[in-house]
Image 1 (spheres, rainbow, N blue to C red):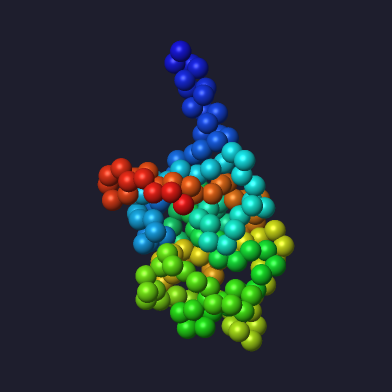
Image 2: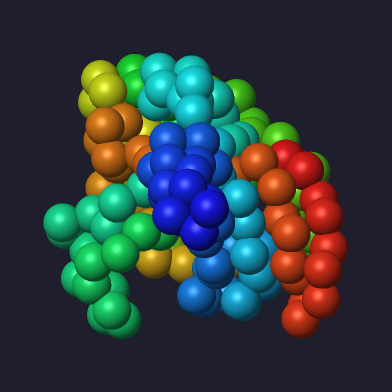
Length: 171
């Protein structure tokens, strides 16, 4: 019976849902340090990722921000393959339109800029532009470029632990 339980748990983790924890403040206020999330892996394809989704992906090879290398990261998808992106002040524009971000506080400093309106960045085919919600304190696509769709592990669907207690919130 124990062997069957371990086998089923392993299969669920490998193919259906996987729990991850948030190691930094880069996704605050949406996800706090040490929050636990469930990531959908079953029936997931990076081709189904949409702007605004929170996803888990393999550590980018060009990450030179410091901190532990390897492992997985959690960020928000800001721009899709083929879209253009740039910033002006604290505002972000995708395909020339102001990005509405109701999940952020009213004042959220951007930190390092994203290209310019004279020279917007075009996200390459099959890649995604990722940002942390804590823009001023997030190592993200502004530093290491877009993320290949094939490196996306899954989509965050549920927070089940927040502020050191159970807290269920769906995405």
